[in-house]
Amino acid sequence: MEPIKNIESLAYFTPEILLVVFAAAVIILDLLVKDQESDWVAYLSLIGLGCSLIAIFITNSLVNTNEPISLFLGMIRLDEFAVFFKILLLLATAATILFSIRSEELDVRLKGEYYALLLAITFGMFLMASSTNLLMIFISLETVSLTSYILAGFLTHSPRSSEAAFKYITYGAVASGTMLFGLSLIFGMAGTGDITQISSQIASVLASGGVSALGVLIAITFILAGIGYKIASAPFHMWSPDVYEGAPIPITAFLSVASKAAGFALFLRFFRTGFDTPEILQSIDWGLLLAIVSALTMTVGNLAALPQRNVKRLLAYSSIAHGGYLLMGAVLLTSEGLSAIVFYLIVYLFMNLGAFYVVVLIANESGSEMIESYRGLSSRAPLVAGAMAIFLFSLTGIPPFAGFFGKWLLFNAVISKGLYWLAFIGLLNSVVSLYYYARIIKAMYLESAEDTDTFSFTKSTFALLSVFVVPTIFIGFLNIFYSLSAKITLQ
Image (cartoon, rainbow, N blue to C red; front, top):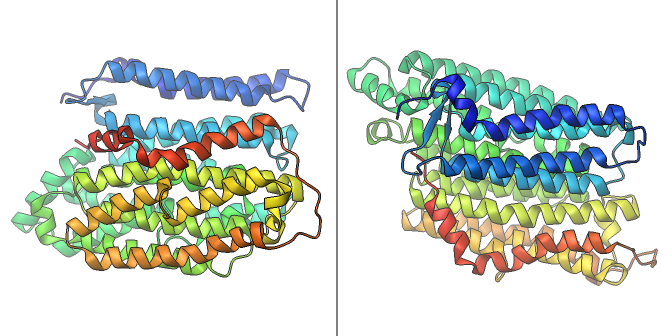
């Protein structure tokens, strides 16, 4: 595959260019529109996402799926793997914008900057999903991180939001420095920044004795710290609960889905392309390292969620646990593991964003994010309570909801490779998660609220809610999604 030069690459880079153009257009429109209550900047952002989505399909039609294109002299790659994650990220961003329109937390005077930053972070995540050069990997990760810090602290009137941004920056700076050191070690060992060539170069120097297996393992560990911070895997998860609790609810939802998806896209491309060769695996069993991280992540996330009373914080720890489940697929280093991750991310998009949408709705009505504000919800807003129950049951992995089918694929892939101990830990953690999810359901259906006034929601609110409810119920039965996940490969 001959890398395409910079100018010629621009034709295939249209989706990213459109995101940048519309981000600038949003800022300009915000300066021109005098009505601060207007949502025109939000609608323009949605139009930008739609245009970018159309451009993705157009550019993808120009690519032979059997021979992906390497753009900008090998800096990024356009293939079906990148296309899938770009579409997933666009859907998550669009949902976040719709949540933001309905959220009462955001300062109306800063809407232009807010939506422009959402488009900018989506651009950075696009690069994370398609980067194939060590330098571009770091630049894309920092683009996403710096924008995330601003969005996490966007509630400038809230000390809790400022604290979240400060902690996010602190942890992020350490993780970025650690990752950069690991990348420099790999570059020094391989003599190239192209991850498609790193595997053969590392295998060669390992065979010749030019570097030790321990040195490569140390470099991998440092890089895993940086990427693990982005996907909130233990022990790099400490930032997640405080940031999720302090950030605006739409941003919390965005970080829990889009940021995690982009992190896994980078993780899978880097490790499966750069280190998944028999020569390297004979010297370094980094799959075992990932298995330990997976077990630790899901256990820490679920146990820490048990005593939580704030629903946002509870879902933050839940998100950590789901990152552990997703890592089960990464441990396998096989196409079955990759397809299981891809399908679970599709499922996770709908059920987790749906749960956060309910959090937005209840916070608007009650002014609280605590479990106590969900008491008696079955009588005050029965449809919303039913939807929340469906999302929580799906997150637990109870059939017949989509989360069950997602976990089934992950567990089945792990068991097929003989990692029974990891599957057993995953099963135990699923049982543990049922307890803290059930606390919310108990509050909604078995407890009475002091205020018995019913919540009133518009038809558009229920329409958007159904967009998440219907796939959460039926997506597991549709073979099209199994087929889609099985077709997505890394080359």
